[in-house]
Structures are given as structure tokens and as C-alpha cells.
Amino acid sequence: MLLIGNQIRLSRPPLASAASQRFELLFKSLARRQVEAGANWLLVDLGPQRKDAAEDLEWLVKTVHDEVTITLALRGDDPAALEAGVRAARDMVLVDATLPGVEDLQPYLDLAARHGTSIALPACPQGLPLPTDERIERVITDLVPRALEAGLSIDRVYVDPLVTALTCDQPMVPATVETIRLLKVGAEPAPNIIAHLDDVSDGAADAARPYIGQAYVTMLLAAGVDGVAVNCLDPGLADAMRVILQRDPANAYDRLLLRLYDVTKAEVEMDPSFVDMSDPEQVKLWKTVRVLNNQLLYADSYLFA
Image 1 (tube, rainbow, N blue to C red):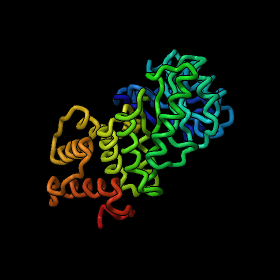
Image 2: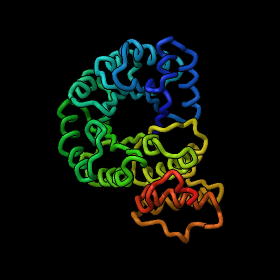
Image 3: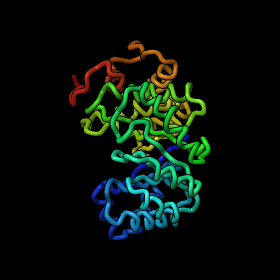
Image 4: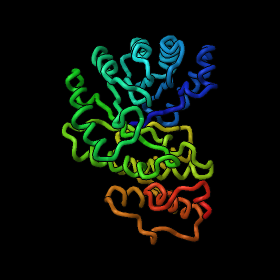
């Protein structure tokens, strides 16, 4: 199971400024803390259309690899900049072509083939959500054949099924879970699948975000995802993943998370009898599951309705 720490993102203005000013200690600390929290890969996300992207990424890769020995997923919309990062890396790198706005995948495929790296490809072009059947068709008939034709082995091909924001396109949230499930059982050869968890709670009320993240990562794991890009410095999320991966519940809330994992894996709905309706935390998780499954309409106040 790949736990990809996602906190080095230059789309965040403070980090973009810190990279421009070469604040080495900040990025070394951020890398080390994520690894200590359990990350076995790190995402280095340049964000869109960044000036001096090649120089910044080369410096970032060297800075991070001076601190930790770990595979880096390099994400951006400029293949030339990514190549600078790949050259600076210590043969432990994935070229991530899943940033919304990327139109032509061929330069990324050529880059990965040229340097012998892994690659992540988007099931939905340019970040625009497709119905489940169209995502499956695109992966099976387009993405995987193109990657193999470029000379990549299937074990180095990763697909991002596209996690959509609950607040913007609620019906597509369960569609992503179904996409993962169907790809794992129906694609031959089957690519690896990685998902960016934080996207599901973009724009959601602050009070709801922890429940959304914990419930949705449980559903993604049950569907068979191979890796998730997450904020592994979030203790609640880290604990939820520990409960699922180690099947080690410490309380009634944890046991409900395991129930969610089991029913999602079995492709059945969660029975309300599993929920202690006198426990506010269990009720909030239960409501969140219903929202994520598009059975209850999202509103900022849904936890308290």
C-alpha cells in the first residue's frame, strides 16, 4: 500500500515563495516529518504554469533527497521542468501527468520511457470527470496501450481515477470508487491505481472535512486502490488508515470504519443497525457515508441536520 505524502505543493503560495527563496530547512523538515508519519512516497507538486519551474524542481528534488531516501512523484504541466527533476532524482521517481490542464500525454510518456521511470496517467482528460464506463474504456483502450507501446512495463503504469470535489459534483464521488473496483477486476493487464484524497473535501465545511477524508479513504481502500496521496500529518486520517490496514479498532467509531470497509468491499450498503445513534461521532460518520454514496444531498450543515 502506497502512502504518498502530499504536503510539498507549490500551488500553495507560502510554499511557492519558500521554494523561490530556497528555504532548504523548511522543505527538509516537511519531507522528514511526512516520512516519519508513514509516507513511503512523497509528492512534489509544481502546480500549473510556474515560472522558473525547472530550476525550482531540480532544487527541490535535490533538497528532499539530501534529507530522505524515498520515491518522489513529480507533478506538473511542463514536461521539460519535470525532466530537470527526474535528472536530479536518485533513480526513485514517478512522472505524474495528472495535473488538470495537461492536454498532450505523449511528452510525459516519452519522458518516462527515456529515463526508465514510472508514470501516472489521468483516467479523465484535463481533470473533467467522465462517467465510470468512459473512464474504464479510456484506461483499457487508450492509456494502458499507449504506455506499453512507449516501452513501459505495466508495473510502472499508474492511473489516477480522478477524485472529484463533493461540493461540486457529488454523483461522481461514488463513481470514482466504482471505477477503481472495476479496473482492479476487469482490466488485463491491470495498471496500478493512485488517488488524490484531499480533492474530495475541497470546498467542504471545515467541520465535515475530517469525516469526509476518513470515510472516503476507507471506501477507496475497500475498492482496491494501490496508493493514496494524503496529508499523512493529519493524525485523525493517519489513525483511520491504521485501523483499516491493520484491522485494529480501538473504539466504537473505529469499528464502524471497519464495517464501512467490509460493506464497501462486499458491494452492499451499510445497515443503519450498525450505527449507535446515541453516539454523535458515529452519527456524523454515518451521515458522511450517505453523502459520499450520493444518498443524502451535501450541504455545509449536513452533519447537524
